[in-house]
Length: 79
Image (cartoon, rainbow, N blue to C red; front, side):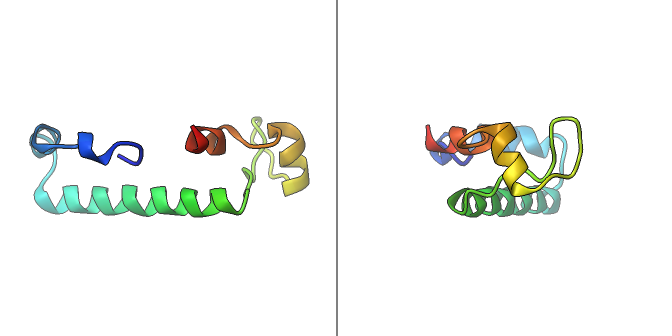
C-alpha cells in the first residue's frame, strides 16, 4: 500500500469484503495508514528499534550498534 497504492484496486477490496464489514475495512485502512505515516515520520528521525532481537529494551545508542547505520525498516523505505 505504501510503495504502490495504485496497485490496490477493486479486487483487493472485494477480497476484503469476503472477510470484513465495510466498517472493519475502514478501520483496518485507518490503522494501516496511521502506521505507515508513523514509521515514515520516525524514519526521518532515524529512530531505531527500542528492543534488541532477543527482546531486551535498549537505548538508541545500543540499537545503532546492533542494527547498523539504518535498521532494516528504514533501509526498505529508502529502496
